[in-house]
Image: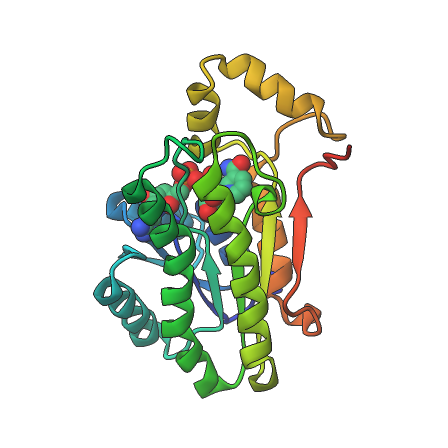
Length: 253
Ligand code: NAD
């Protein structure tokens, strides 16, 4: 541990799944982690677990679609340690619908959380990072930001746009010491993936199809995304800006 010693890192959607794993990995590396989620009880449970391991974490309820909630969570983080060094925009959701069946309300919901939520957080956190003159923002995009999967139109569009929000943030604030990069996970074992497998009607076939298409021969583990986030958050990779990593086991052709 120790690669993020003393850094203050805010993670969204951190009550479970990838967010909880990212929060844990950052805390193990010495960060003070603000664990935020719509699910406040879930966020508190993660913080209790980290606290029991002697790690530094706090929980705050956060809805990334609500500007007041975003401002309150950023303020709570500043009040805690007076700075924010890392932001991980991980909160996200998937709605299963194709181009024709998707409703406008569903389109808006997915964009509001997956894309606009990351922008709202970035807009609120960058001024705090500018006070210190450094910071690292990590956006959790998806392999589906590059390759759409049938029936995932809104999700695929939101994740592709998130990659260019990443590049835009990187060029807007790189000179000020703020880096912004993205992670594009393939299929990682979480509730979201289980929900997708269930929606296919044959979860086992869906899982073996995915496993058959990647070269590591299994689903990803949340802690493997946690380790990737730590890499982007760390000062060791100070020249890594506006970039992304695909973490999918080597899906190939
Ligand atoms: P998950 O559904 O297990 O967890 C998502 C978390 O986000 C939940 O705790 C939920 O309460 C929270 N959340 C939802 N809406 C929110 C809002 N408005 N404000 C704050 N929090 C909110 O999902 P996961 O698999 O852990 O996914 C995390 C991120 O990783 C998502 O952005 C997802 O798109 C992305 N991703 C996941 C996979 C995968 O295979 N699991 C692959 C690629 C990308």
